[in-house]
Length: 281
Image (cartoon, rainbow, N blue to C red; front, side, top):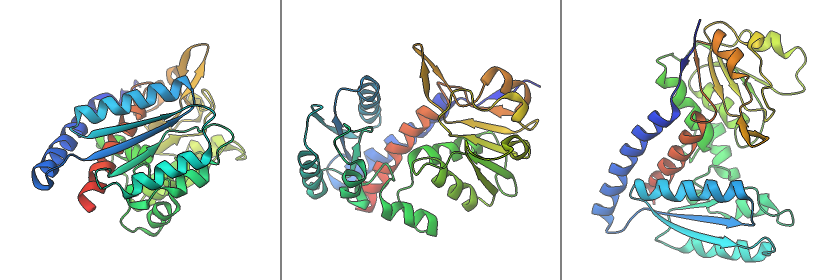
């Protein structure tokens, strides 16, 4: 069996086109553009690339971006004071703080300072809680993108056995909740799970978000499964997923590549959250 590759770039481009229409309709109705504020602190090269890509995506989708760059030594107070001002700014519908922040800054305190209605990353406790309760909210972007990628295969999520490897607040936990909301039977596993292979081999849908290079090998995958690889692991200048792609593509029915799979969808969901936040304001 050779897997069908799930093209995240192609799907993200389609969704960004839909977002652009919504953003243009918002501007026609409200007399201003949808606005996203992007806050970067420090000199992390990968973070700078991510921010640049997000700003470019905003421009393409007719969303106005506001960029705020701080040096590595910026104080936590300076960052939170900016967030307080952005919370009050009626031209800003979404606030994104690029992670990681410098080590002397408490990420949790900074993220919780963002107004939940402008928390387009979906990291705030209010949004996380509402997601768990099944209430209307701004959900975490990467898990949203994974759901769209699964749906794009034509495979029905309802009734399937889904396994999520990873339990982070950013991906693993909200991913499990979204799969439950789509009526999958969900198991959450992680790097400490005993006999993980016996669990993954039952997965019709396998989401790998453990953050370890090629952690999932081909012999851990059920024949015909949908495999979503969230991993972004850099080694010797090359990007690797959490799944051994060459082994997995022989077993899986559908699989996302790294890069070109989940990454573009995360940005698309960020833009969608931003337009949704604007429409709800």
